Image (cartoon, rainbow, N blue to C red):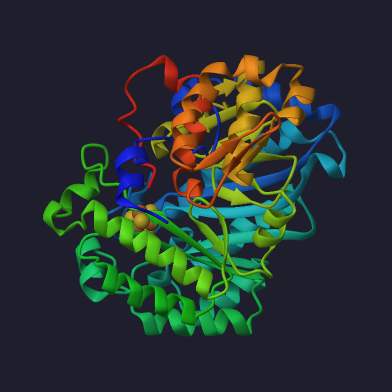
Length: 458
Ligand code: SF4
C-alpha cells in the first residue's frame, strides 16, 4: 500500500494535528487571562476533566529525543519541582471549584514527560495523594503513566498499581542492540518481558508500547525482529512513530550519525511491514500511528466513530476539558488552548508570584472551531460528513471550503480519498498521509509559506 510514489508526492512536512489551530499559532498570554476566562465560562456547564501532568526529568538522554526534558541524575530536583506542581494544582483547583463535585470530576489522568518514573515511589505517592485531595475521580477513571523500562522493576510496578494506575505505556522504540546503542537507550527484551508478565499478573487494564521506525542502524529485517518480539508480548495498544531527524531543532539528534539513518525507501518498507504485520497478528488500525487489539477501548470507540484526539494523541473521552500541569503542559478548556512556561525557573517564578504559569494561549474564533471539527473528523474517523458540518455551523460546505476541496483533487486523483455531495472519505492508503490531507483545511498554513518546522507526514 505504501509506495515510493506515495512518499515522493505526499511525504511533506506537516503538523500532527493534536490540536487545531496548532500550538505554533498560540499568542503570548503571560498572565493566563485566556485560561481564566475559559475556566470561568465552564461554571454553568462543567465538563468532565482530563488531567495531564508533565514530569520533565530523565536520567539520560536518548539521541532521537525531541521532547521538553531535563537530563539529570540528581533526583533531588524532583522534590522542589513537585512542590511547585502542587501550587499550580491548588491554584487551578481553586479556580475550577464552585462547591460541586462535577467542578472537579476527573475521568482521565495521564502522567507523561520526560520520564514520570524518574520520581521515586514516595514522590509518586505524594503526587497521587495531592491529586486525591484536590479532585474527585469518576468511577472507572483511566489513570495512565508512561514507564521507562530502565527506571522500573516489578516491585515498582506493584506500587503503581497500588497508587491506582490502571494503564501503562512502555517506551520501547526498538529491541535491536545496534539500534539501542546508536540512540543511547539500552534496555533488554528480557527485562521488558518480565515487566510485561508482572503487569499482566497485576491486571493493568491496558498496556501500550511505543515504537519508532526510521532510527539509525535500523533495517527492515532488524525492525521485523523487534516487531515480532513486541507482538509476542501482546500489548493492548501499539504506537508506531516515524523518526523525524531535525538536528537543527533538537540538539540530542546532532549525536546521530546521518549515514546510519535508513533511506526513504527503507523507512517506507518498515512502515509497510509493520502495518501488515500488526494486522496479520490481530491488531486493528486506529489511525495515523496507533494500533489496538479488538478488545481495547480505543478499538471500540474507533468502531463507534467516537475517537478523539488531543495533545497526548488519540483518546477515548468525549466532551472533556483537558488541564495540563507542569512545565510546557498544554490545556484545552472550552474554546481555549493555553500552554505553560517551558523552563522550570520561569514556571516556578510565575507561581511564586501567585500567577498562572502560562506562556501563550489561543481562544478559537468561529472559523477555527469549524476547521477544527473538519480536521479532527479526518484525523479520527478518516471522513467528513459535509451535511452534519453544514447543520452544525450554518454554512454551505462546498462554498465555504472551495479552496480546500480544490487541494483535495490531487489526493482524489491519486486514489487516496473520494469526495461526494455529502461525504469526504479517506481510504486505507490515504490514512498514511492523513496529515497531508488534513492540511488542505488548515487556514493558517495556506497563509504563510514556511512549513519546514514540521516533521514529514510519513
Ligand atoms: S525519549 Fe523520553 S526518556 Fe528519552 S530523553 Fe526523551 S523524554 Fe527522556
